[in-house]
Length: 217
Image: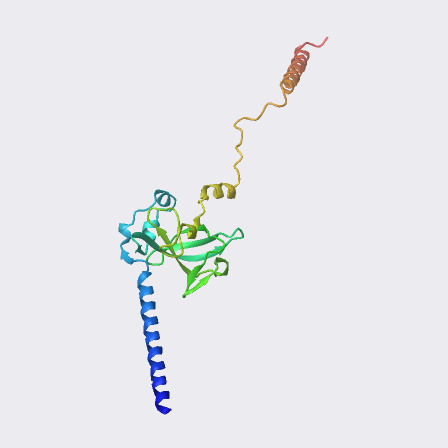
């Protein structure tokens, strides 16, 4: 009886070990069948910038911290200090160079479901606090930013077009030009009246002089 139990127990252990080994092999094969994206490093000087991005933000090349290649596409990484979350859902971030010097602010409009990673945890943009340093990525030759390299088109953060000239025009009061000459609203009547008064005074003066020169009778 004991012998049969021992044989049964050994057989069960062998079967369990075989199943565990088979599962491990299958899991390893499944991992090998789903390769991750190929990631490599590049120089910021090798990035081809979008013309509109360079025109609106001339400092963009100076703000590039590094270039990351994901599946053959270059992504420029930027560091920006979070400044403000606006009521319309847009955010303003101050982009910095390698020395931490401010280059310029960019207004971005993230999607309602987009997140940004901080210390390994995803945050809503509405949860961010002023002064937190964020990482943004710009795909090569594209007018957009993302919160991670290799992001899909639906994960791009829309850039709000800069309106500095319009904002400055609204902030400055309109200048009222002073007319070079005063408008002639009174007409010629005052001049005629003045001329008549001068003529009358002249006549009185002449009459008085004649009377003074005339001999007394």
